[in-house]
Length: 226
Length: 300
View 1 (cartoon, rainbow over the protein chains, first blue to last red):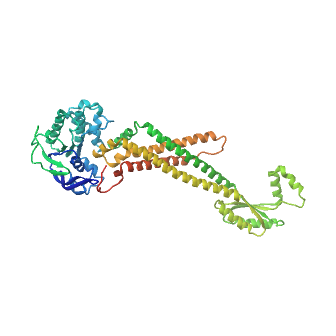
View 2 (cartoon, chains in turn purple, yellow; view 1 turned 180 degrees about the horizontal axis):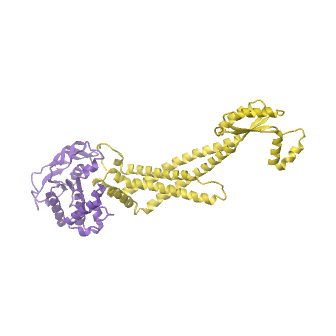
């Protein structure tokens, strides 16, 4: 299991964000976590990249246990993850190339290797011509594709995408979902949090439903147009 | 090597576009150092003066009238044998008169007015050894010599020496106080600048952190910012004081701080700047200051 949660709970002061969550993520799996706003989707993802740690319960991600991880190990865990946000979070003072290259640069990768990997990814995303542009010069869809390229650049084991289509129109959203599915077909596990699971074609992913911090298997797939 | 190059690049990106806030910090650090440097300069000059005075200071033991030159010389030999004494010179009454006439030529008539039987007293001029030049040692030596048979009085610049020594000590304490104030105020100024800097670049810090950047990599640009503010501020403050010192040289005889002292002041600036940025980082990124297992709370 790449991610294993057993009886995990987390509170923001007195408000219970997650209660007794037990779940797992297998290698190469595509997991959709759905639920209304405030259900705890973002909290669940933050626990996975250990931005926060559970109050109770056991959590293990990519071989790192939450109850034993040290500050020195935290960057090693993060290098096994790629994180995509709803608001892209590209660095405005850097070019597309530098934004995508950042995870490799902070890991001390040789510049020649970085160049090769970034060019390869930008070509795959159809954004080679944008490599010297700045984020504010790109459309929303392009910015999200760059954010996905940044998440993918260091060959992570898991992509954690928090409402990656939340700020995009339906056409572009479809393209981003297709891109994540392509990435998953390449062997990378994907966890996507979304309030609208209808964007994911039935049968292509496992779905979990969160409601007021509690996880459940909905037992059905909310099809397109339903 | 690639990582080091990246760190330098982050330092540059961190400093770029923040000219006004950096300038304000630099100015505040410089002005604080100007005050400190002036105190230091005055103390150092007074200290040097005290040393020179101590080196030239002597003691004179006046002898009883009628003491034979042989007895006076043997007494001088006894004094010369003391640990705190470097040398002793016997001044006969005739030599004392010659010295008086040469040192006070306008007052020669004072001697002429006295009867021919009056003679200036013979004395022993005592030069203390290096270890015997402190006010306490001088006082002890004077007491010992004054207690010897045949000695009428012992004089030396005890009040002057003591006052000068007290003034230098008081200034040194004031320097220490000014130094402490300087450390606190500059640390707070730099800490605040670094906090603002981290806050301005919070997105960069977050993205670096989730991209797997080690803690030292995230912290280094801000620590370098504090170090540079401290070094540049103290150097600028020192340069301003040096310029003022040069301009006042004609009217106020003094010497500027020697190079090792100047380097120490600049080094102090660097250390204080670094400490300030560390404080700022602890406030802005509390998680980065700790090591060991992470238990609860948010990790940045």
